[in-house]
Length: 543
Image (cartoon, rainbow, N blue to C red):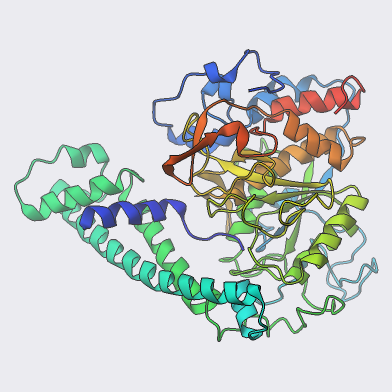
């Protein structure tokens, strides 16, 4: 399930409702990154849009040193002729016509467009740019709702799903009402301040400078001052609140609705892995739902140095869209078949910015992960956005269950960083886990591509995973001799760590050392990863 809900809007709701009632492979030129001073100044708009590419030492922002790597490494790697790496993006759909993506979209070289024939005999007719396993479907139930609909089988899973569903349904009802109440209050406050200041847009400083004895104005100032703690723009605040209302409405109408069946339109049996004759070649799908996959794709490989929009992490990459993730929980069958499709059609890296907490057919997905490993394909997976300790809660898909040994060595799970280096550098929403999260990467307020040539900030571990997928793709482009498991280990070993105690789940009382919340204890660093990959490839270093 890709996460639509704005994390910032959750914080807005909390504040307003309350108011109303270090052992790293340090290839950077320092001995200890903990000596880096905290950045006190607010990031400029340009810094915020590019923070994930920043360098911790130079910028005091915990980015991946992408700009530094391109400036100081790639133009100095003599004798290397990078290959093109295909990255499979298993997601909600990708706007393959976006101005910043159209030149980096994979095209099946053995398929003739529009002739209605499976020219390459891969089982998919006219799959020119990928495949759509969802057909015309967009909305879906959560897996817990599907489990309930199958009936009480006396299992612990059924009882857990039923109890959790009842809780979440009531929460969705309450949250929708609260968001609507908050939006009304903010809209009214905004109108009052516009009239008071004589302008449609205003800054927090202008609001703070208002001197009035009018109770209506004072109340509006109080409300917006609380909002400005999250966002410094009234229009953005209202936008995020509307997204919150939409998210909870979708939960009630689709995700948690026991009477809703989004699969009928697809025409297959989702409980039969041998029923594979379904889907189509429309890898965009509905553009509203394609926002997530388009954003993910831009993070990986938006065309660099074209003077348009943004630069993705990786060049020498082609994006293979595989539409797999609805607004709701993905089906295990679709995930398993999508992994196999990407592998069989040449992907060497697969990005999965989705996940769920029930998986009735997890063995199908495990078999697909192992199949990818046998074909030397690296899978990058988002850790999830519920602030869970994944050593205590299973998330799917994953490479193990209940902390048992990993089923394969080609699966890398990514948590999300915030742009504030220090105690707040773990994103408030990010899952974590010493055993079951491998690394952390930028995932808060990430600027990337959206449909119809748009660009937008989104956040989540969904944004952190593709950042790492871009790093993996670059390593595989420049060092094709390195195997998937070696690339995984290079990414984990070459990152930067910190001795800081970091806040988890936004709760200041819940702190752990950064080095203890993932298996590597590291934040991904492209600069270091390429240097280590070069040494491993030349047999100068053993992993």
